[in-house]
Amino acid sequence: MQMRTNGPHRQNIRDNAPSQAPVAVQTGKDRTIAAISIEGPCVNEDELKRTIDKLHADYASRLPRTVARMEDLWRRLVAAEIPLTQLEDLVRMAHSITGSGATFGLPSASRVARELELVLEQLKESARQPGPAEQKAVLALLAALRQAAVRP
Image 1 (cartoon, helix red, strand yellow):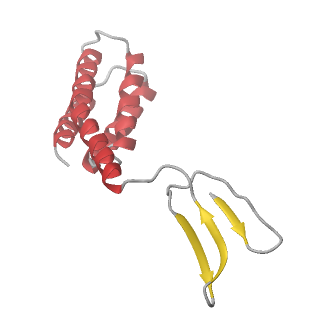
Image 2 (cartoon, rainbow, N blue to C red; image 1 turned 120 degrees about the horizontal axis):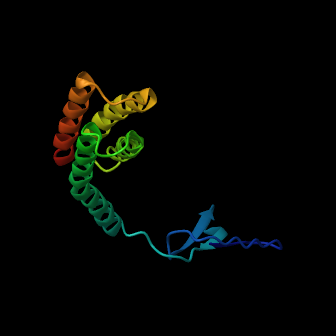
């Protein structure tokens, strides 16, 4: 943006404001006190909305696959096919969904993922194989997350 003030003092200010139209600020009897010319890309609201909608759709289409990977990882952990240290991956995945689900239009996925994250954190801290009650709780939360991943 470039701004010029009338009188002996002139100011030049530049930044990338989102408009291309010149603007004049007037007071009194058609007296211009500042003329502003803004250069830079315009924000097209329709294009912005389409971009946001596409980001939401892309996230929603990937989330069921993420949950399926989490279910597979949990199954392998319970079966002792992989080390318990892999529980950290599940915690991280749940944490990611906790933060991103609501942002991308799936608030119920965020809520369920947060519950799952808390249970998984406790299991990780215990550093032991999950017992039957813990297995049942995690399976129920993964099933709820799977459902939340396909409907808002």
